[in-house]
Length: 228
Image 1: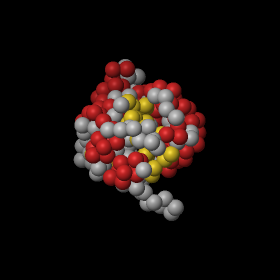
Image 2: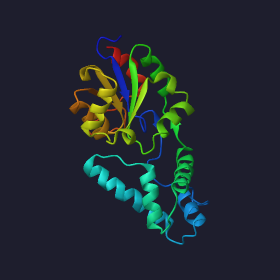
Image 3: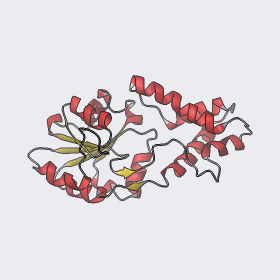
Image 4: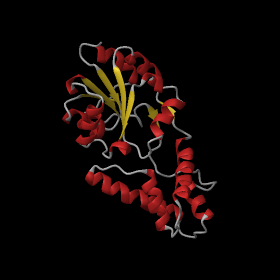
């Protein structure tokens, strides 16, 4: 076991996979999941505008409180905004269609598999991710054959708190006890993945875009660096 770190915790979106953070899907030539839902339920409302509004309302509150929200909550608010009294099954169908389209272009970042495999040999590797659906991260880890290197996932939607709120890090430490000083957190978002873990007593390593006073590492840099 590494003398410096026992655990390496990874953010997921933008860190281990490339993704588009927009909440929209579709290329403009076919119906989006939201538009298809409205059509199925006979609503002539502006589905795209209502979809954006449903997300924006939840996101605004979450940024203020640190409490995470789910895709199910977004779907319910969207249905209300377009005047549809949809069943739970119908709302779940919307979520499933949306996620199928939204995840289609996601790909692993360069070096993700090799880095996880190398670090898992002598560290406990855990994914700690903000997400709005409990299935999303585990399914993508399986899709890209990354899950075999990961001991566990801790997800904001399951815990009720999102990074960088300290409650999410506290919850992860409660579930998977470790000395925070011996946990290395790797991520691409400065406040969520660098400042948040540091406030929790962890070391943090930035793999996001370059910015003033922020020189990113690559995933390939990590195995040697974390063993020093």
